[in-house]
Image (tube, rainbow, N blue to C red):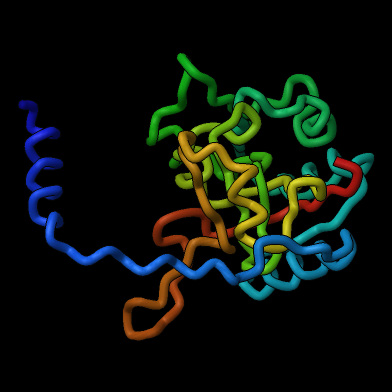
Length: 212
């Protein structure tokens, strides 16, 4: 018997006489028919309440908006699967600020720590809680690139916004490394004083893109 099998056997033995648990109530809302404009408004409200900066733009204006958000960055990292057209204005040919993180050519923690910003897309966003979820896809990259740099620019396609958590879960692949973001990294654990950037980016810029 393996160690795993032994542990599971002991758990089963300990629970053998436990009463059957009551069914979990499922009366909470599972879906919403909120119109797109209201979804965007709700998500913007929640994100701004978390002290994130939010732009709502048309797809044609995405590259210029990304360039504006990254203009002060001395360097920035992008995942290998990012859409190259998004960087047409932010990183024209010859721009040495852009660093690419790719399988087999990952940036070290020291390199990421020395990078000003990161640009990613996102998998799904939950308007009611103001939460953006990254799933490690090619246009979002591994978790480290969105956690180590001090400034995160995150693209949110309108088509990926839902109102409720139960609507978001079926869109996720739970076998992937999920990163849940609700505003810039912050904590008030010490003397109730808000401190930003403790365990993630100090700045969060969200670009919500219509038509994407």
